[in-house]
Amino acid sequence: APTRGDVLVTVAAGISTYQIASATIWVLPAVPFPAAYRVMAHASSVLGTRIVSFWGLDCMLKDFDYFTTLVAYTLAPFGIVLLGMPIIVLVQKLFKRTRSSLADVTYALTIVAYVALPGASSITLRYFQCLAFDSGDNRQAKKALAADLSISCRSPSYKHWLPYVVLMIVVWVVGVPLTFAVVLWRHRFRLNPRLRTPKYAIDDATPFARGYKEHDTMLR
Image (cartoon, rainbow, N blue to C red; front, side, top):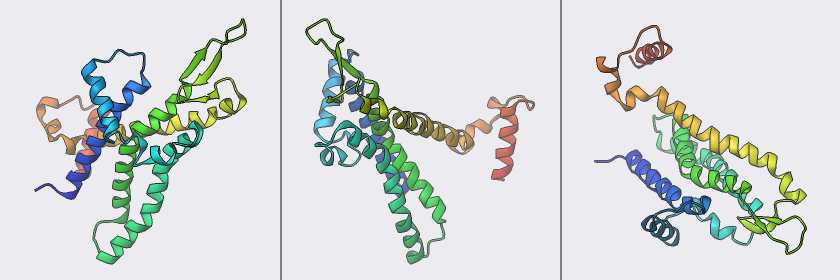
């Protein structure tokens, strides 16, 4: 029978898949996606499967501007984890579970980051998506943020947000996927025991072979 962890991982994978599918048509409007794909993406948005809203943030933030929404999308996952940590520790003590609190916190952090990643990355990158409008005279064309047409891409307030956006790109667009990649690489032998077979053997002098031996020794 599937364990609780199996169910949570399956749900997280399904949510993230629909997030990515439904967000692509908005992030890449110039790409001519197949009609069937566009129908599926729109349907997932309408049915609420598109959790780019990160568990209802779209409804709560619909009356706020882009920058308020950006902060909520990128910081809400950290707030959820910080609020959940005391609850995890309390449950550990009440039920006297043998599993360490750090393991549960790490697991919760991984699930939250996995679910929040597509939405946080998508809204962060929308900062650079501006639309140009002809002003009707010989003056410079007006540019407005595609995610919020009330914000001018030439305004000082827009430019002031650039350091925060760059930081969120480092955290969400680069940092989280890179962290996942490192974790998967470190545990690749547990995920795929076939890597231990002679078919995948490599020269002992390479760094990959040394990493293999260190990891194999640690597991033993």
